[in-house]
Image (cartoon, rainbow, N blue to C red; front, side):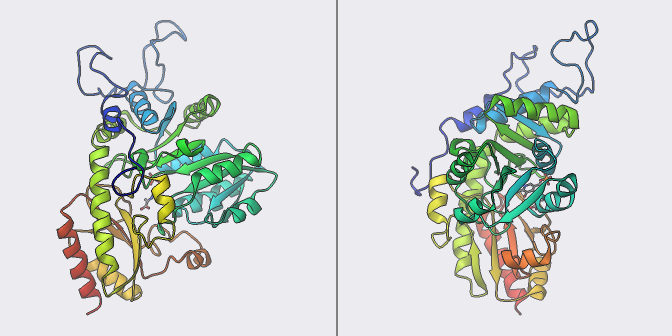
Length: 394
Ligand code: P1T
């Protein structure tokens, strides 16, 4: 346990992030940095005889090095990189067949909600959206044909935290149900779902893992040989793969992941505590705050929280728009996890595709603003929020 009462990040994390997947002797010439194999195909020695690679969709050395590193960081055996976070989700859901059923946490990223309701549903796979904070509700939602439980913790944008170990135990007691955790908000530096019994961890690599807002990518990590083989097959067969250049960029970004996450964690908690006392703010949703309803669970399950959190103010849409128009350092944009701070309005932006009644149930109202605290100076960010709140309520 760390000084702050949260789990300690895994020992050796930064060393693994820097060294696993590539060493200077791997490809000859002693290149300290992972080379970019910018090729779509590979020469064969004889028909169907090759030097380990045949075609870029099936495999590429730059991609495979990144995947090796991603697997190690999550304590997995295998990782597969995909063309986007939703590409990872699409591929993982393709493990299922028509007639199967998914139980998903209700408060998922808007794009995941849309994929389940408007695409996966048409393929004959139904999804029940359930509040995962009560295990009985999950248990009741499990049907005979339930094959997958989809968890996001903390959730986007309400920051609900759910008990991965308890849900994994329930899933295993009810048959062979695959437990998936979207770990985008925390990364393996702050939470390792496989250690708590999850079967698959998925990421929007676009966010913290890359951290520089210049790549769209996804990943899935597993520690089961059968799941690894099936997901590897789907990666090749469905073709949702990233480019070698993007794999290089993400691999580079992993080298500073531990440092970045420490800074995001410290800065966001400091700002969240300050914002809680702000006269115009009614609620701050941040799992690192003792007032968060699942703070104790967050301490048992994570090594702290990252830079993304939401708050509610006393105004409505007009004030939210004015706030977002007045911030100077924060950039009004979707996404999160980059070195730059972003602010957005989930009701009109990231979660606009969630049906209105579901948004109302979840509390995604026009007075809910989501922040992604970047790596700028904390004091500058607080000053920026303060001046924008003042302007919004003038
Ligand atoms: O954008 P993409 O790389 O396809 O990742 C989708 C995705 C999956 N899971 C979570 C938890 C996410 O937050 C996202 C993408 N989210 C945003 C773009 C956003 O602003 O919330």
